Image 1 (spheres, helix red, strand yellow):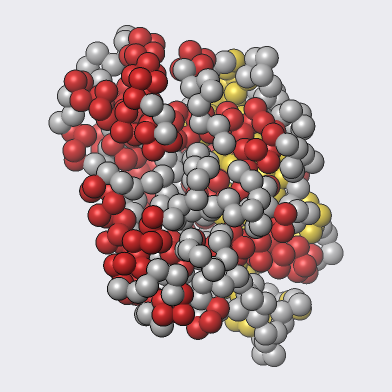
Image 2 (cartoon, rainbow, N blue to C red; image 1 turned 180 degrees about the vertical axis):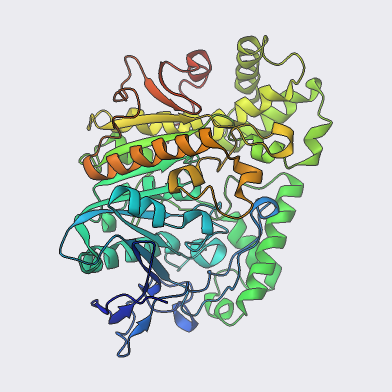
Length: 506
């Protein structure tokens, strides 16, 4: 192994390795291990180490629960609380140059995931764009988002802020510019980067945001899942000291059972463990914050995938036999999670049935997929873009349309499809089975990477290999379609967008 020079950080010395012209540093602690009294507590600064930290291997994943996405992407490896709050760095060089920094915040419904996922390997992006790429771990599920009296809310978000502070203070030693940091993330990571824009403690730690498939964030705090977890473990609600004595494996097992029961009974929320408006760390809903001009100096690139919701209907065997007469009940049940009344749900269903009548004669489940995609993702992206462009004209919108070949094409351009295209990791083993392959896929990945890289450098995603990408505004609502071809569309699915007027606000 070809080792890097020894790098001096404020936490201690680290040494990684070189591969294909990139210097790689893995498993660097950015905070103390969240064990003992630090479990369910905000991240604490770790003690500086005196030896040279071996940064050639990833640290462990944080303890995490189950989601159906494991069926596609597998279960992570080693999980631990000890040494789990770590980050990984890919840099072209540790010289005196200052390069844009791109900090990735992973998705996984705030329940699963980690910075060591091979799809997030940062070498290709760092090499192609002369940027420094960072991925992080942060606490998940009940361990990161416990919501009960007397406990600091949003601990997982505070982990993210601690990681950003470490990057801001140390990244110059890795050839990065601490004053040119882009945070980007997908799904739970997408809503994380938007939420960070609204958190006072994160101000000044980044200059640009790329939000990929950021799901809508419910305005009310999620408390039932935390309450039910205490009951499942036989612990009095709020007795965190007792909960700290429970082995983490047992906590995660209880979490899985609580969430499975809620899903079976139809009482689950949209992300049962998630960021919560607490009046302190997160004073107001991120959408309200953007409307009020919070983060007005931050450039924003935001978008989603064409068929986000198909990842759930495609993996759920119950949807293989759904009949059209069941749609009203299904749509009403889904939309009721954001307190949308049944009459309005039926009105929305009628609009989609009308606009899609020529597209769904052979497979009417497409209507439900389209409503689910817009409900959870596309309209949320539009709301955030609408709010932010009031204060900052550097807002760009995209729609990703490359379809998955998996399940005979049933998944379409579902949730998570854009990930290896953004990172240039289509060659990850077995990735082609889900994401596809071939010359067109490689060209699309290169264009996506170059747009993300250009945005990190300048706050504008334009480059010479795509048509002019215009800013998003309310007059023409121009969106860049990223697929087998790049093209700009105006007022994409505007009748469907208007169906949600007055809904899905903070």
